[in-house]
Image 1 (cartoon, helix red, strand yellow):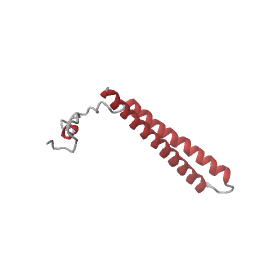
Image 2 (cartoon, one colour):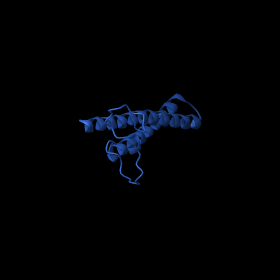
Image 3 (cartoon, one colour):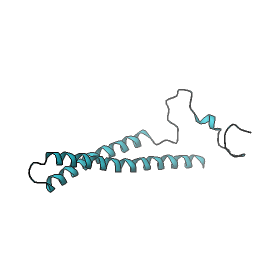
Length: 107
């Protein structure tokens, strides 16, 4: 009986082969490309910038008098919310890309 918890007849490699102990810095072939990671990172940064601009604008329009604290809070909340939302979508897209590559290599 094999050392892992896989069912008999499972054609995948043993779990012990899944760990890369060779010190190689190469990414597994099913991972999305570096370009995809860079685009995901850039989209989170751009969304944070635009979210901050929107938050600042909302605080500026909604406040009269001395509103520097409100503008700062609007900027921080807007940028954080926008970056978090786009970050979640980016992670889901990268996971889907990895799954598509994994399923495509099994065919």
